[in-house]
Length: 224
Ligand code: DX5
Ligand code: ZN
Image (cartoon, rainbow, N blue to C red; front, side, top):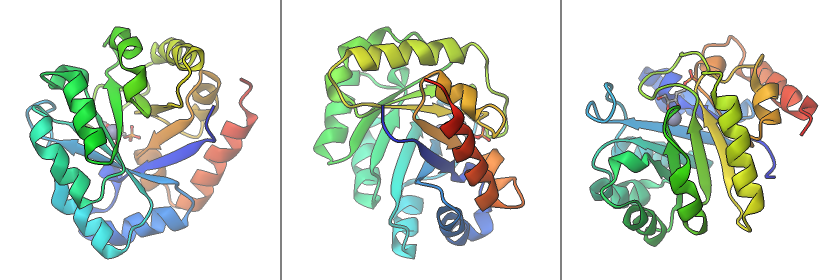
């Protein structure tokens, strides 16, 4: 299992000072920055394009940028996100015409590819793609908005994904996204996640640093 990573989702950051808020959350202890790309087509919301990723890099953000594409189609814009400075690029398999081609394209662009599974999407495709991915992202809310509640059935799905990854010979992160809070992160870690996206729980808190610290303490208490 990988060392735990907290990925702060800037969907809940202060958009009027995105660069500063991103820097602040990193100084407060976040490991990755999670960038939710929404297109008002695959999901009913509209957010960041490659120019925002580039702007964060130009502002001096050097941390890992975890770009979560909730867009359809996906392929055309992937090279632009790579060029702008993305590290991980994940997408929803149902939004791609050919999942293998899209994974290969991300790899050719020198980024780390990953698949995202909605709460009701089957993991069947996972076993056919284990050799091509660096990360699996399980959604624990339906994608589109921050601030939703964690869907309980995803605990069992996390355990299944953990088992599939552990039984493979591949080095793959297991990420969870949606409704992650201080009071459920331990249980999420126990179900097998190692990469924790949190938006409203961090950016909605008075003190980012103490929130991230409490999250890490809870993860450390997890019994696997
Ligand atoms: C939802 C996004 C999430 C979102 C999570 O579609 O993919 O990354 O920012 O927000 P919280 O942590 O508030 O549930
Ligand atoms: Zn996300």
